[in-house]
Length: 371
Ligand code: SF4
Ligand code: FES
Image (spheres, rainbow, N blue to C red):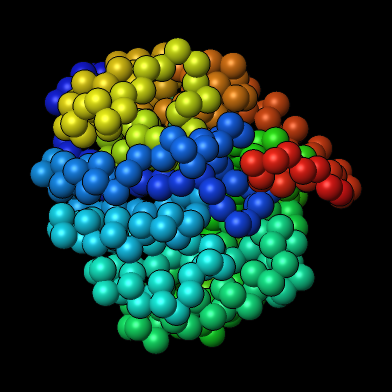
């Protein structure tokens, strides 16, 4: 196999738009950057509408309306309508706590296709604690009912960590009870706030393996009823995930202020130049933006990735994690067992998993630290 050049890229499959970093929840595992963008910097409805037209023209098929909490934008229905009118499949990724029946009606009328609802636990105490929002449990359940009553497909998103790992089986039951068609069991990925809270969130390996086995046993039993996707924890993996589907290969993230990012944590890598949708078309960004070209393809790789048979399967793993754990964004992701850092991070994870309750840095505009 020879290294292949970064151009020309195929069109992105989808665009994830972080409409705002505002959010009523304060999840300890939030992957948003520690430096959240302020509301005054958010781009307007018309600019989003242009971006959606450009995304469709480029060949993208779907848009994920995300955040923060996307429904914190007063123009969320107009934004949804613009995406639908551009011909994109629209997926709302929401905490569900701020959506009134009136707003939900407007979203459906605007052409929303799908809703993805997060739960932080399968009982009120766990859910409200890890979302750092009292009363979220009831509101989320009410939101799920609005989605299914409207006949829209519902996905439940469960981010798993040491505090709720024992509830993986109960998450499956909750998804079935709420009428979801899909459940995402996503182990915490340690970026942003989750990296800051890693010691408090890291689960023990043996319990992770039990949870993975539980999901694998449930899949055939629930075939045709519930699809269960699973993201396994990097630190205990043998191979890394193809982060973002490979850098600059299939997806674009756009920040609230319009910065186009190859992945949600790309701004953690110093020296990258991010173009803004206010200044460049999406086609220009996708083709020529220095940030998208930085790690596209395989030319940038070093050993052991460069000559590895999996280099066009996992694309060297995650650049942001390589920087965070190996100090070099062009290094092999330490989640890979071929990385010289792999044994060290697995030992660190095992040690962190044994720590007792640790102080949590809840996600917030105003820093708040509580045990
Ligand atoms: Fe993937 Fe690189 Fe590991 Fe090979 S060495 S499996 S390409 S991360
Ligand atoms: Fe940036 Fe993985 S989060 S490449």
